[in-house]
Amino acid sequence: MAFFHQAMAAASYSTPSISPTMFKAMPWKQAFATFYGDETASETMGGACGYGNLFNSGYGTATAALSTVLFGNGYSCGQCFQIMCVKSKFCYTGFTTITATNLCPPNWSQDSNHGGWCNPPRQHFDMSKPAFMKIAQWKAGIVPVSYRRVPCIKKGGIKFALQGNGYWLLVYVMNVAGGGDVASMLVKGSKTGWMSMSHNWGASYQAFATLSGQTLSFKLTSYTSHQTIIVNNVAPSNWRVGMTYQANVNFR
Image (tube, rainbow, N blue to C red; front, side):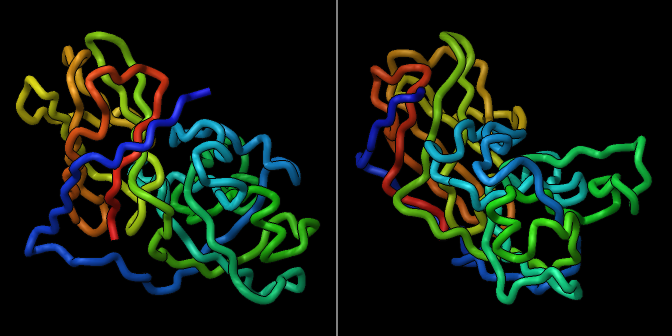
C-alpha cells in the first residue's frame, strides 16, 4: 500500500495563450455498454491505466474499460464520460458519470456484433457493474448508450505515485481534473534542468535518470485541452518509491 504525502509547496499554473482556459463538455455520441465483474467491482481493480486500487486512488466504482478505439493507447486514461442508456426496455432514466481506468481488449475469436464488443472500430464501454446498474438493469447484458466527454471534477491537486529505482523514475499520474488526461510530461530535479519523460503505458511516464536525493518538479500538458501545469518541488528530496505526492494545483 502506497504512502501518501500532501505537498502544498510552491506550485505554478500556466495556460498558454493558444489554449482554451477550461475543458468543456463535448457533443453526445452513440456507443454500446456492457459490464464486467460483480457488485463489489473487485475485478475492476488495477487495470491498464495503472491506477491500482481504485478506492485508494479515488476513482471508486464509477469506472469503465474502454474499447481500443476509445482507449487511444492509454491517452484516454482518466477521461470522464457521462453515459445514459437509450433505446432499450432495460434502460433507467438519467445518466451516470464514469472515469476511464482500463482497456477492454479486442476478442477476435468473436464476431464484433456477437461477443466481440470491444473489437475495432466499435466504440464501447465495459463498465463496472455498479456503474452499469445506474443506467440499466444488469440482466440486459448489453445496451445502446449515448455518451459524451465531460470535465473531471476532482478534490485537491494532481497526485504523483512514484515507482522505479535509482536510475529509473516511473510516475503514475492520478486525480487529474479538467480533461482528465495527460499528453506529455517533464521532470526536473533540484540539480537538473527539465527532462522529457516518455509515455510508458496507461497513465504512467518514465525518465531514465538519477534523481534520488533531489526535490522533484513536474510539467504536464493535457492531451485534450493542451493546458500546461508546472508543479514545483512536489516531492521532497527524501522522496521514496511507493509513495504518492499531491500538488496544490490541477487542470480546469
